[in-house]
Length: 206
Length: 206
Image 1: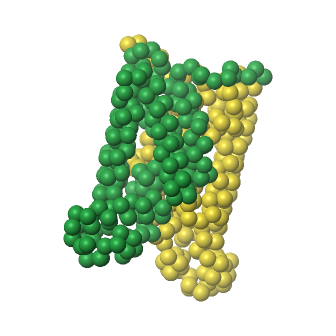
Image 2: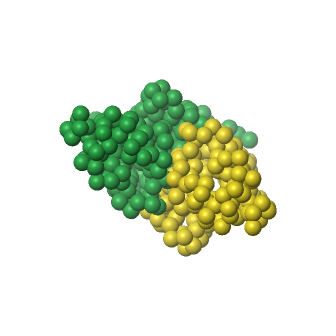
Image 3: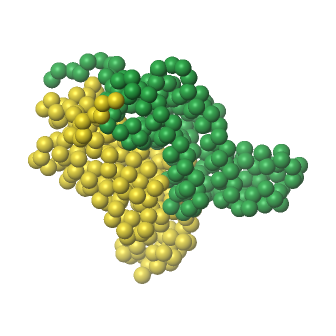
């Protein structure tokens, strides 16, 4: 125990779980250390402040999520198939989270944007950079789909931002209703945003 | 001062401002009373708990916002014009908030959904009811537009949910970047979601 890299990992893991469950503001360093099973003195050996810990948790979370996004979006499949996989993966990962802790925790970056961005400039900047990366990854697939004439968008970057905004909004609903089925319409909404044909029931005549 | 209805209003007003600025979890009753200029004893005369205060703040906020939504969506104009007014009003009110307190505060209901819904069941239920009302108000306009063949949607309720999700997602970005111009594309995104023609530049040929 103590000042080992193991303690740092324990603190990070405990902080990640607690932030997912209860947000950042309500947490204290003592509580995080207790959950991590690490003496409080160790905390300040590894992290300058609670804010520094928040940044480390955000980085760790994005490293994992970015790999998952790259896998979903980077395969040899057609661009729209890859985009659909991103939504399926999102739904699956929110469902896995719900099964392990009882509630849909939503998107940590969205959660922290709404909770922290107006209070902590360093966190705001880090979250901006992450969302820019997300939009960039989606934009790249949208540009490919556009080049193939699968979709019709005026501005790939703006379209990608709309898709990520739709994702954040629907994940918010999934958290609100504690129900990942809220994410079901993401794919058809995305197709509509991108001006692709809807692979669903024909529009009912009135 | 003290146990007058004036004190209740002061507590509500102070709590609303503080929640907009810093969220709910980080606030204490003592701090709210200090900002309201009301003795702490008064608090528990009017509110059973901090949670009861949160519910009262949410109700007050929704009462105001619901009137604004009803004005925007209930005029004699064409349905899509009314929907556009809702987005213009949202952008104007976020801008006014930014000018008065320096930061874009976002949507209180979205903020509290991400911060509180997994911790406080009464707040979750209240926020669900508010979002259902919002979706219902937008659905009603979408149904009118559909009946006029202005748009093509398979399911008006689902389309309304997608529009509100898009609104929440873009308001999140406006807060993240502290820039209400993030809300500019809302209208064209909404038209795309509803299968209406895009009143913009033609799609560039590649």
